[in-house]
Amino acid sequence: MKKVLYLLLFIATGTMSAQKINWMTMDEALAAQQKEPKKIFMDVYTVWCGPCKMLDRNTFANPDVAAFINENYYAVKFNAEGTEVINYLGNTYTNPRHDPKKSRGRNSQHELAQALKLQGYPSMVFFDEKGNYIQPIVGYHSPKRLEIYVKMVGNDDYKDITTQEKWATYQEEFEYSWPN
Image 1 (cartoon, rainbow, N blue to C red):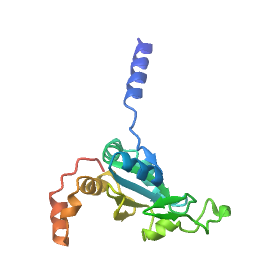
Image 2: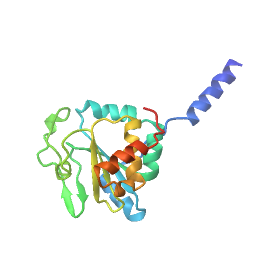
Image 3: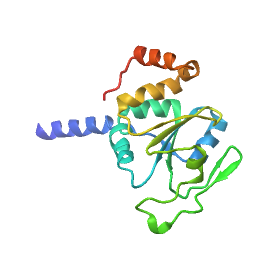
Image 4: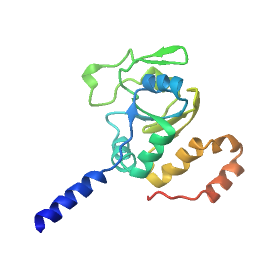
């Protein structure tokens, strides 16, 4: 009887495994947009950033977050101090000052992170269905704190939020459904 219970528990655990975000590169996301238009959600991180690791562990591993991002966005994982070559809006972005000897610590900032004017990590950047820059949010966000942003952009509500008053009203009326 114990063996049957363990087998059932094993099967149930396997079918209820946590959903993961389908990460890709920026070039892959831009190419995918050509076939099926969808917004881009970019997680901009660095290897030395503790809050970036917490975001991966606590927020991006949340099944509600993963399901919503996978359904509504192309998800991009981008190292702001990495060496990836990115072709974006007719420009090629690299990190020519990257020092391979500093692979575990702070390094030079990638040209795309500079072009996006990112000042802190983690940063999560939103792009529309044509790859145009919308807005970043900076810092660690729990699933509940991230929910309002990914849904606001994902549902195009951000287009109607043109004043501080409209943003305050949106926040007051927003109904959270993800755990903290």
